[in-house]
Image (tube, rainbow, N blue to C red; front, side):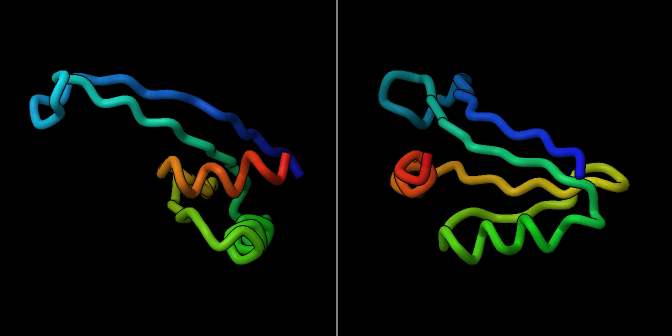
Length: 76
């Protein structure tokens, strides 16, 4: 199993936000499609996040709401 995961913070202009910027924290874990069941188990265990197809052979488990990220950070 080859895997890649990370915590990131995206900052981008958003005129709908009071200060004109949006800050979005993200946890992301990528796996080959043959290991999709692992991402599904993470999602079921933590009860948060979504799984997306990412390229031809990869799937990505992603958690991006701050309240949901607390579930992930408590685990670590």
